[in-house]
Image (cartoon, rainbow, N blue to C red):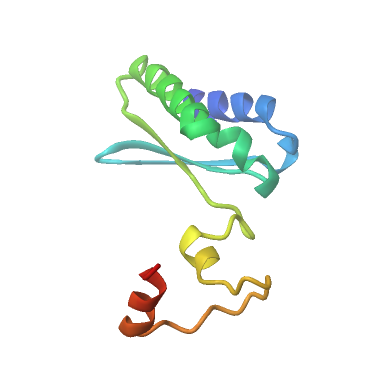
Amino acid sequence: MHEDQQFLETLVKALVDHPEVVKTNRTVDEMGVLLTLDVHAEDMGKIIGRSGNTAKAIRTLLRVVGMKHDARVNLKINEPEGGRVSRDMEASMEPNGNDVPNEPKSLDQAIDDLKI
């Protein structure tokens, strides 16, 4: 395992509640090194952090590790299976909590909804 990949794994395992699930993958192409990270769905918040600050910090540290070896290191955090529902999908769900998307509204209905 390369130094940058080992560093990422060690760092992430120290942050999460499910370190046994943490997986990393390393690929190299003309753009540099790409590390992909998979974590347990419950740990995504810890890895992303408030406003993405933890993820930004991890990426910064990985770039510093990469500079030691004259490599550009990037990080991709994979969305776990059963991850969060996208805001668009959540907004289209019925208010009663059913996972049935609402029917699209006509333009007239949308305008009527905007009227006070």
